[in-house]
Image (cartoon, one colour):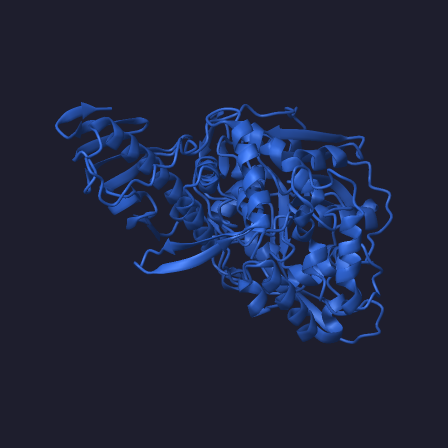
Length: 622
């Protein structure tokens, strides 16, 4: 499924946490970075009664608070009491919409508990699954979970809404905010702190608008203001080129990266790219890449450092005519987008955003009349609405997605406020494209006690995606009343952006490549392998098999890359193994590979960190 700007991406939702949680060692004065995978934790209900101190309860709320439609929903609630006397209670509010907070934050998992107790010292920790997510009446629309194209999304969303029937209208953000209030009341707590991530920031702000007297403080990570997203995701599209340029300020050509993305997206919107992609099992798959695919793939890079490392070279190669690496990346992106409803409910996402709006039509407008209303609204927009992207990009937002949603769409306003005058810290990643820093700046300006922390080079879900530990340390300091910086030092990326994609080569060249040319291909292929490892196994802590562009494969596991005839250029293969020796950043791999193939100067290369050298064709290289 293509990405949505509010952090609801189906692609690599665990990547935001992989290798990114910083646990600052109390009293040691330094940050220790450890891998942490909250979504790999046991199911919430499995830990209830087993994990030390974890208290699980249920809160029953009405389906329809007006009482017109009968029924109730039972919310699954988890609480981890603070050691000793509690300083307060903090609600952990996940994103999407569609992620169940109890399921995502994984309280009861020792690593998760250590992290959140560090971030919120002395606080009771509370996470509950929103209605329609996790263990709280999960909405599961299978076709929508696996939809990829815009047309598939529209059809599947309409069918999902039809399957919900009269219940479809009771999942708005305003309704979620009232559920949060019901949980607060059930716990008997007067004031609560809120830690919202991505869409969770919008829900936290919605609660603060509705119940300002019960808010102690707000921590907003990857901020989505209450009035966003706009119907077309235009604010995201306008900000994207500048974000890409900033990402490549060190290590790749930012102006080129941004212009490549814009040029490819507009070109493929007019005439999509179609080609065959080699799969890991040796078969091929035909994949079509349109303008919306380029935007989705680029957007998801803010959740995947491995994908971010791949993109500059891949899009530049495609712009020059070498499109096979892009086609492979599109297929890998599709595979990463397939996830279960328990992890992120596409049905709940649709039920919430289609009820929230806003849309360029009246909420009661019949389904049959919405497409014309949408096209008329897009045609009337001023030039530059979508930044450098053409008017085709107007279909990228939720207005297009919700065209067929049954019943009223939009028209579910949040409470009018005012917002409480309480301490508020907003954390924004410099590489966050779905919730750009301008969002956070806008919200900070609404709080007299607001403060903004920007973390350069880091993507979405910033506190747990910052491998330096700076963001986590700042949150801890803010919670205990210590000064908080306005920016963190820029750290090296986990893996450097791939310098270039190897030239395709010819299956049967008239002469062999020189030792130097072969070395260049091998070096670029090894960079590619490291980025692919981080994008797949490194993001999840599991394992993955990834094909070479022209043959062979790499097997990525928790700490190793095994290459078997891996070929990113025709006639050149690499085989061997690389192991992760040090976390960094940057990550440090060591190992040796054998270079072969019909076009290669053959030999062996050794890798140690950034140093690659050896002998090819009887000549020393490196």
